[in-house]
Length: 186
Image 1: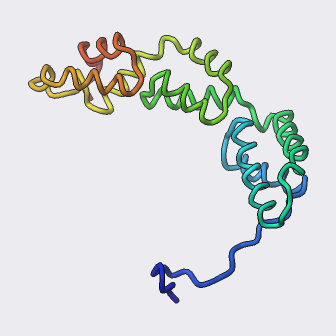
Image 2: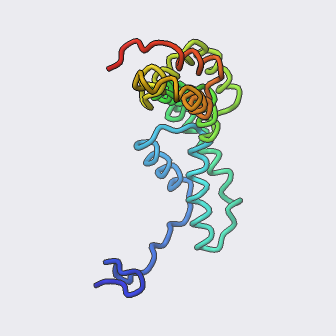
Image 3: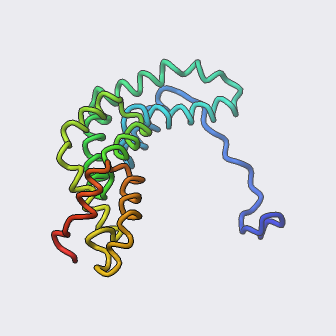
């Protein structure tokens, strides 16, 4: 049976009622989420806070009543090692670097996930030499500079520099990549 307004095949069924929040429910929800995703503590806090807000909105409770339970669940997950901000940040930064992300883009992504600024700056210092390698990956993926057709390379130099600048690479790194030679043009 299709819905007349939307044309979808969904039947008119009542919306699912969110469960009442208990400490056990929050712990199970956290474990279920952590089975699927590796996240920093702040991201887990956001996910569980959304669950609390939805349940409290439906049942007419105050979300502040569950703040202590939320803090206890987060602390328990951190203490047992299920949530480790450093491990998450190192793994995510390495993945983004392999994809050709600049250190600025990596820092922004990690900050959006709730990783502390101190940890992000620590990782940036540790990966100081990886910037040119990431720029080379980005240029190869987008066919910029040395990976562009040799006849067109000079005509697109400024455009290639601008592309790398928009990706967060500094001018010196972008110029070195665009004006350099490709290690392997495969």
